Length: 182
Image (spheres, rainbow, N blue to C red):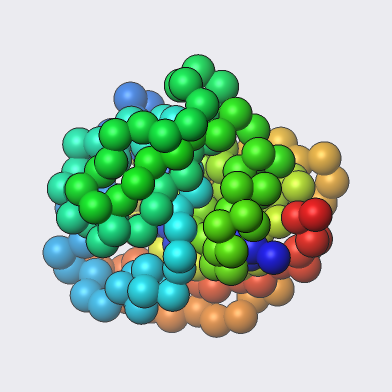
């Protein structure tokens, strides 16, 4: 069974990107945050699961960032199946969450990194997100891409840890009761 894990940064007012998808407000903090635990987290995952918008934004980053980890994209608009690699990382597009879950299970992936607002929201709604490491940086955007959206029912979260990072950022780790993806 594949478990899904998120490691995200957001503004103080809950946005993961600005109104036009910009991330500079977040990447500017990377230099001062120090060790956020992301490298250890990334080393623990076997695949990435992200939506089309996140995938298209990440096309502008250095492909070496993905370290050869397979990338799985949820999209109704991109062609289903294999796409050109990002560096050493294979890219596969899936039309919906069940197809993604089935593909990861068939590949024997046990831990997947869920990235992007809509993907995290879909996994939360389906009861498939195991945990979330959320780093709130002290900046207010006023508008943008929200981390959370509508859910079919309340999703209880258990706070596992909180730590203060440099520059006033706060990192919280939450666990969720997850359902089997089968």
